[in-house]
Image 1 (spheres, one colour):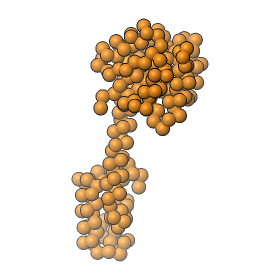
Image 2 (image 1 turned 135 degrees about the vertical axis):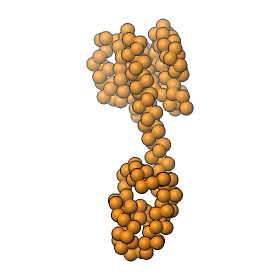
Image 3 (image 1 turned 90 degrees about the horizontal axis):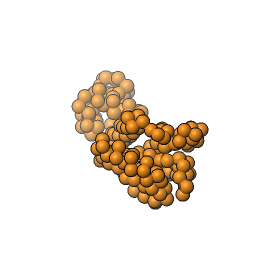
Image 4 (image 1 turned 180 degrees about the vertical axis):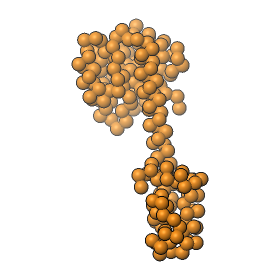
Length: 200
């Protein structure tokens, strides 16, 4: 899914300039000139980040940020500030903003900030999806298979596992084959890597 940059800026000229800049590098953009309209839409936000102006007469960017960060899923937010708003921007970062830029902004600097945040967000999503998949695989193991897996990733040999669990070596080998199949691990290194994701 392509990432979307949401612009929340009441100044039409600034909003248009931002939209043009972002679209010039093939980013998907949605612009909101009114913070209330953005908040009404915020439950339906797709993957991406938010460019949020600090000073808006209808509702300040700080208020919008606080409302966003109270939700279970808060998108990465870049605050847009004037030079005199630096203390406010620092406060915004304490609340949950990822970054801030000052007007007039350097276009290349802004694009780099956005691309860094989007890349980081995508990496987090990939890691979360991977962890969720591994957790499902682990949940499919029987209690005995989990015991064997714990010992395998701790470096125990089949013979040692057999003694530890008081079962036959052939039974250990059978459990190991089932574990590798269910965990979709081609080798021991992959199994260990997956166990590290599960922190077991």
